[in-house]
Length: 441
Image 1 (cartoon, rainbow, N blue to C red):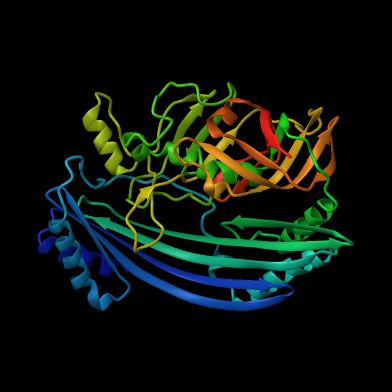
Image 2 (tube, one colour):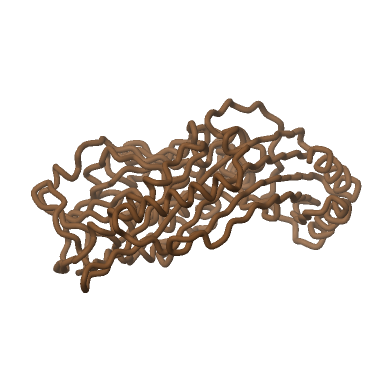
């Protein structure tokens, strides 16, 4: 892979590129799908490819290939694409060579060596976890990945990373007379420490607890958003506004540094160095060293998330020194980098928020967050596996519940957080209690 990257860099440079970046990945993955109480399929694959980004007079071209025999053609195609594109007056340069910090907990040799048969066993354990509660599994899956990435550019960057991950999820259903209830749960980790049986058991228990739900009147009330629920909402409303690209294009509600964005004790950081984090690595996908970036401090907006392009553009437009925050991420070798979160961590003084709630509703997960307006932050979602909270105790399940609101209003109304901090992918968040939320019964 390193030899192939060097060859691509040389070919694109010879073809006339002013700057060249080559990004290579090799990924061994195992995928298991379950249906009812059976393994639907199990597969193992090895993916390898190279993406070449070439810059000519400020214009950017890109090409990729998964065949080393076509590296020369792909490199020249990236240069041809750049020449056919209009120069970008805001282009600064690719990142330059730097030193990289140490990170921990991102590679597990047990995952790297895992056999397909063991992955099947884990999926079966997850099914057993559901059936142990009396619930019936409907669908699920388990995915294991061991990947290596290598990035090299004409500004002196040459860096290799290795990482592992495992994720598991399952959905289930419970029927009791005329009552029907569903639920799901999942877990994700960089190490082989997932308790697959427990993932299934939690889903089954939640489905059982949600049976025979009652109704609730439409009104404004206290809402406790569980980690899965609030993370889903944040992904489609709040996170897009953190991107410096959206800020620079006028598509973000968070343009004013120093503005009051959240509750007074709310702190939000994006931490590319977090131990065992799903988004943790020594460098981002452009080769910029990872860092911990403060987004909100005591509810006040302190910064945005940058890649090399937006940092160069902002630096040229302001008197302050703006640099990349290490937030360039890619979906694979066949994609150019875009701004994304690494490990977005929410912190608020923790307590037993359920016990402290006299009257409210607890929501475990939501449906429809992807339909939210990512620019305004408005959302209208259906709550799933919801329960009344009365005098500090979780009581009756609620059959149907809608929540309508705006993420930026919601963040300002946070007045409590639980101790149940959970990593929902790249979002690390506890249950958040929010006052005066519109609930539609």
